[in-house]
Image (cartoon, rainbow, N blue to C red; front, side, top):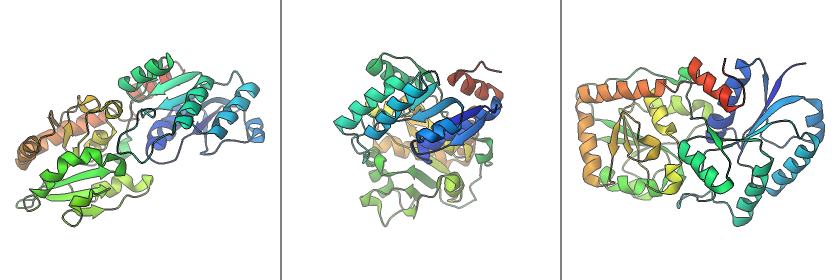
Length: 327
């Protein structure tokens, strides 16, 4: 009988792709299993049609999801469920439009009991899960595919330094620190905001709309940037975030300037210890030196390459996360 792995992301974009779909497919292929994807809760007849070996899912907090897992666990008590967490959902970012009500948080807390194993994107996230549920979580870091890598791009003589930020509106408070930096350097640098743009910067920066996940990194690369920035507020929610943004920038050959907090502390890019305008300006001035910028870019790309999902050592980590002995 064919081995089957169910992949049940919260959505096919962003965290659903990086936390469930991408590692799940790599895992299934590595053990000779077939991955079945779905973003909806399977009906009883679907569970009966397939004989799954394990289920990979994430952030289950709706009442209908809780009821589903109650029924599922009763029917299939021995089928392993791996539940992934990559956000501190019970202590959301203050600027996030995605905030769970108390009832939904309570529902999530109840649904976690049906998971046989917890998986976290970072050690800080795993520690937070222990504090809340008194359960260990396997730390499976975010990874990036080799096919996303691009050569480090040199800046043409006389061309302005082009700086990019890529992300959604949940990062609005994180970007407050960078607004005066952009406003004071619009004639010196070219600024590109890919996705969300703070109101004070509209009309003075280039805006690139977000794209589908399959085109995301290709579209970011097409902006022709020379530097990627990753500002974050130093708050519990952000300390549990992953290093994904600098993995993406590094894969595209971009040196990074990022806030010096947990997700980015190992980055070989320039780290901003305090969110002061002078510190950001100083870091940008370093990037004006093309030799220094290219050297940092090479180091950032090498860092990203160490998290390439096709590397045998990383496939072994994925296998361990989902309960299989590393091959």
